[in-house]
Length: 543
Image 1 (cartoon, one colour):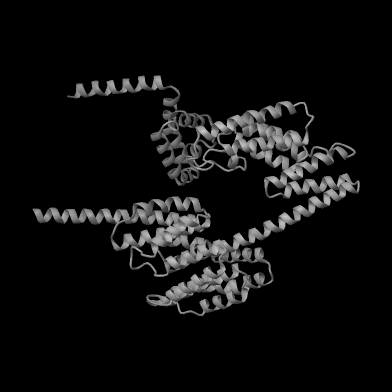
Image 2: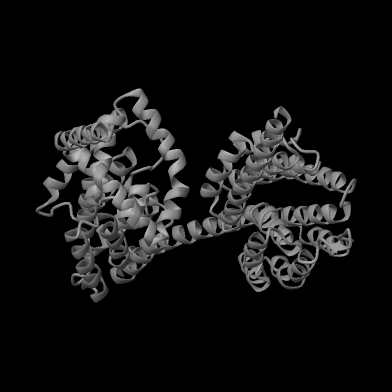
């Protein structure tokens, strides 16, 4: 009997381990897809739980935990969390599993150095990783993949010729492992990069080169192959697709994209300065219409708030010199009517986004800034939100200092200054922009489960739950701990719910009694007491 009990316990342990592995593998697949899609924060949140909890100390469990930590590091690097990623690299220097490739930690170190712009150290780290990948099991495929990573890194630093050599060496590598070519998908990808993208990089057309890489990825259907592989429990093509999508595209290729964006931003800023200078010159030449057109273009093309403010200051000067008041475009009227409807429906986030689109259409129209400022101020919760409201109101005052509403506008700024200070004291930064309108103003959705279920952060049920949080949870240490954990764990859940209407309806049904209990605590308590008494009476009758 004792032996039979041990056998049952062993079977139960094996079943539990299998269930844990299956659940973790499902989580890894979901996180891998998020990472491949560039949804780095959501991927990190999923992977964070796997790494912190660990799978188990079996061989398979250790492999999955190491893989999760590697993927988390890549997601963190993509978000600029280099110090946190460095901690992952340190942990992977002593991997849990002997099957984890020896170069895993060095590969991450190299990527971190690359994102920091440390050319010599980054390339030296890639050299070391190539050497390490050249030894041991599957060294042909591992070395080829590291050569490709180093090639991309060389492109980041502008050495197209050296990058070509590494790509050619990777294509010429022998990737056969146990009669299977582990580079069956990478080789056509690298060959296409050599033939189609590298000539563009060599011509200094960095963004065009990156666009061509995206076209190659789409043509080879790498994301589709990854998803299909996950459904089948893993395939050689799926493994190759993951290698490209994770380690290349979210690694050094992401650094290349960041460099391209930096170059584009510098060029845009230079063009902006030139446009503003040309507008000032037009004013001196008594050509207010040309100056007006240039200031409007400067506002629309501005990449930051300060550049928009400079364009607004120019418009405030030049509008007074025009022979007639600029006409209101029909497109602007359409946007304002739509915004009015959204305000009536209490979709404030949507209305704020429409006002932003409206003043890009007609940045000289001062009332747009006034109305948008009032909307942001109405729903503001954080310091950043109040800052945004005040900035918009100051733009209104710049454009219309003598308007009938000017006094009220300045008083609103004073009011928001007080509320901003109170927000700093009453609402500690548990999570950046967790419920602010800085993201909402750009049309982004909230990441809370209630928001995902009800469709808007300003829907009445969500507002009730938010008020309960502010008054009863954030005012004490246990409540703040609960809210912090909720902010940490809810984004991927909310993302999952938001895309499925049936789940949204279910969550709404579950949250409605919670909202009722928050709004009517006395009635809810009475109903709960009555229910408990009813259960007690029923149990006495059954006894």
